[in-house]
Amino acid sequence: MLTGRQTLGTIEQSREDLRREEAELSKRIERSTRSLTDLQERQSEAYRDLARFRLNTDAAGALNTRLDSAAREARRLLDKRSADYKVLTDQLRHCEAERVELQKSRLEFDSGRDAAENQMDELMEAVDGRLENDSAYLAQRERTEKALATAEAAAQKAATSEKDRQEKGKAYEADPLFIYLWKRGFGTPDYSHRGLVRSLDRWVAGLVRFQDARANYAVLTSIPDKMARHAERCAQNAEDEQQKLADFSRNAMIDAAGTDLVGTIENLSDQIEQIDGELDGLDRRIETLSGALAEFSSGEDADFQKAEEHLSVSLQADDLNDLWLAALDTPSPEDEKTVQRIADFRERIEQVAREIRQDRELQRDMSRRRAELADVIKRFRSNGYGSWESTFSDDKLTTVLLGELVKGAITGAEYWARAERSHKRRKPRGRRVAFPKGSGLPKSMGGFGGRRGADRKRGSGSFKTGGGFGGGGFKTGDQF
Image (cartoon, rainbow, N blue to C red; front, side, top):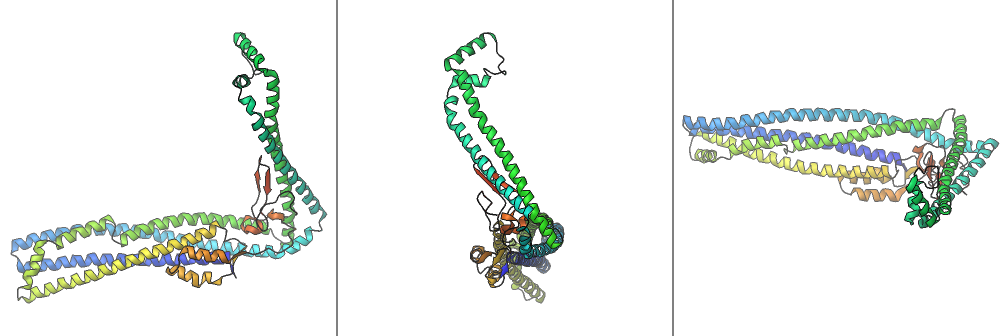
C-alpha cells in the first residue's frame, strides 16, 4: 500500500525528470538550429565561389557584396541571439539549481514530519489510557462540552432574534413618518431641533403615535445586537475551554514522547509550507524561461527569423539559379565540384530542417505530457491526497500507470480516476480519547487532526470547532 506523500513525491519526481528531458531536447533543437544557419552560410560561400568562375569581375564583385552583406547581417543577428540565449540559459540554470536545493530541504523536513507523525500515532493509545483516567481532564472535557452546547444555543437564539427583527420590523420601516422621526432621534436626548421644526415634529409624532412605537422598535432592534454579542462571548468561551482541553492532550503527548511532537510537526509543516511557496514561484519562473528558450530553440524568435530571411532572400535570387544552371552546362571540374558542394549543402540543410521539425513536434508532445502531470499534482494537493492519513491500494500508481502517463499513453484525467478509486484514509490508533475531534492536533495530519482553531458561524444557529479524526466538526451532542 502506498502513502499519499510517497505517491505525490513520485509523481513530482517524474515531472522533474520530464522537465529535464524537455530541457535537453531544447538544447538539441538549438544546436540543430545553429547548425542549419551555419550550413546556409556555407552554402552562400559556395555560391560565391561558383560566381568567380562564371561571372566577370564586376558582376562577381556585386554578387559577393550582396551575399556578404546578407551574411554579415545574419551573423550580427545570430551573435545577438546567442548572447540573449546565454543569458536565458544562465538564469534557467540558476533557478533549477535553487530549486534542487529547496527540494532537498523540503524532503528533509518532510521526512522529519513523517517520523514525528508516525511516532505520535504510535503513542495515541498510551495517551488515551492516561487521559481516560485523569479526573482533571474529564472535568475539563465536561466544561468544554457545556461551553460548546451554550455557544450553540446562543448562536441559535441570536439567529432567531435577528429573524424576528427583520420580520416584525417591516411594519415600522415601511412607515415613512415613523422612520423620519426615528432617524432624527425624536423623543431622545439626541434630538436637537427647536422652534417651528420641533412643533411640527411633535405634531407628526402625535399622528403616528410615535412614542409608543419608538419604545417597541427600540426593544426590537436592541435585542438582536445583545444576543449577537452574547453569542460572541459564548463562542469565545467555548474556544478557550476547548484550547484548555487540547492542552491536556498535547501535554500528555509531550510526557509520553519526551518532546513536543505536535509543536515539532507544526514547525516542520510551516517550513514546508514556506518552501512550497518558494517552489511555486520558482516553477513559474522556470516555466517562463523554458518557454522563452523553447521559442529560441525552435527558431521562432524575431532575431533568428530575420537572420534566416536575409540568407534565404540571397540564396533564392534568380541570378544564383542562373549560376547553378550555367555550371551544369560547362565541363569545368572546378564548377562541378562547387555544384556538388552546393547540392550536398542543400541535402544536409533539408535533413537538418526535417530533424528540427521532428524534434519540435516531440517538444510539443513533452510539454503536453508535463502539463498532464502538473494537473494531476494540482488535483492531489487540492484534495489533500498528500496528507498523513492518505493511502492508495493500487501500487501501479507509481509504476505502470505513472509510466503510461509520462509517455502520454493515458491522460491525466484517466490517471486521476484510478487514483480516486484506490484512495483511502488510514485510521489513527487509540480510542479517540485524546485530541477529541482533532482539537489540538497539527493541521498537517489532515483527517487525523483536522483543522486547528474554531470555525464558527455566528448568528446562523451553527457552531463548529475542530476537525475530527475522520473529518467533520464537533457539534453539540457529539461524544468526546
